Image (cartoon, rainbow, N blue to C red):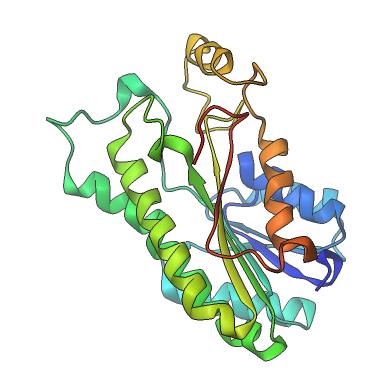
Length: 254
């Protein structure tokens, strides 16, 4: 299915990386569902930018199963067709601030649970809610946003990284189960992005240090990562599933 035929749900799609992902799909002519939790004004502005005939803003907490089912139903009703493509981008409240992260001595299960709900649980909820529609049309694309901190914990964000590792495992097991239905499940893992709301707390010297370690000698932007997400929704990726593509300017491998 071409991108301009797809109905794409972008969770946390009104700000930061999500906003650039929504824009990327809008540029390619997709029907875009801009999901938001609290950013109603930003979502409305983005829908006006993308065009109300091709985009809709829908509120919903993606860690709440009932709210996820409701937004999937509203999207189907609005566009007259089911969601075919999910970009699990929403991030549980988090700041990439190494000085403010919980240390091993202070880390709590609540810290971990908050991130697990925002990554693995939300991914499961959105996928389950959209599965009937995907099976109905015999096509589905799920793209989960991960992190290169698995391979390069330059700052050990224990809670965030553990949750994203769980999401990668679920990406691969879901890919194995859903391939027979014409549904692919993949992950795109960025590094620190310049700049999102979450990375705004990062000191400039950290950005410079990361940039110096990449072959491109710069930090990847949200728009650049969004372009990589498009690949997994496009016809060119039809034989690719269960994969984790790292988009960080070449900082880490594998």
